[in-house]
Length: 235
Ligand SMILES: Cc1ncc(COP(=O)(O)O)c(C=O)c1O
Image (cartoon, rainbow, N blue to C red; front, top):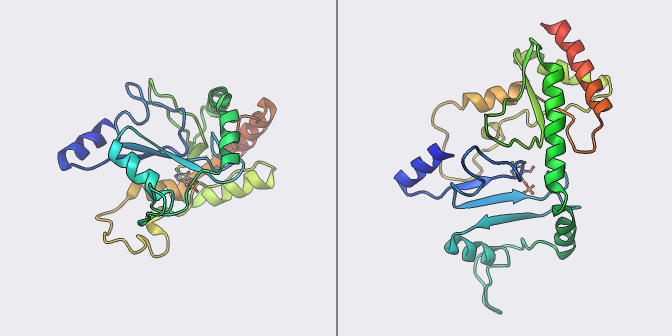
């Protein structure tokens, strides 16, 4: 984030963080939003802080962004009868109520995710065919997902199939990098300069293991057992 802030300052750019999977996470010397101009998040049901349908929010201390976004979310209006370009993106009251109730618990839920992630990492220590998630010292990683990467990308789909066939809800988030999606960048006037090797490598080799606060230790241990079984055959 510090490096991104530096580049943005040099070129007079705004930095917008997407923390849809990272609400309640933080860096070693900074919190979310401290090195950016705005933070956007999603409250879609499966997120760490999710409502019972769709929702989202933007956090900012920048008065200009605040004013613009408040207007955009409500049909471009900040004054009755006066409209400019905008959308209907107001947070539904019912969803806001659900989020207010969940807000009291979500730090505890993040802690639970962290405990489960540690259990995965401890149980999978020593695997040879994949790399495990890495947490930078001093950072709080809230594990919206627990993602391993197969060293041999051509074996990834086989691993997912093996786990699913054995009752483990493994998934890929996501198997096609955004710049490889059909028609990207969707009418915008720019193109990707050079390769995006890390994104492509991740898309080809990522496997998400089950992760949510209600998961039991027994379930995590079963997933570990099956991953170790696959690793043994593929190392
Ligand atoms: C990192 C990230 N950004 C953005 C989104 C999009 O959120 P929404 O569908 O609520 O707009 C998601 C949700 O899947 C996400 O994980």
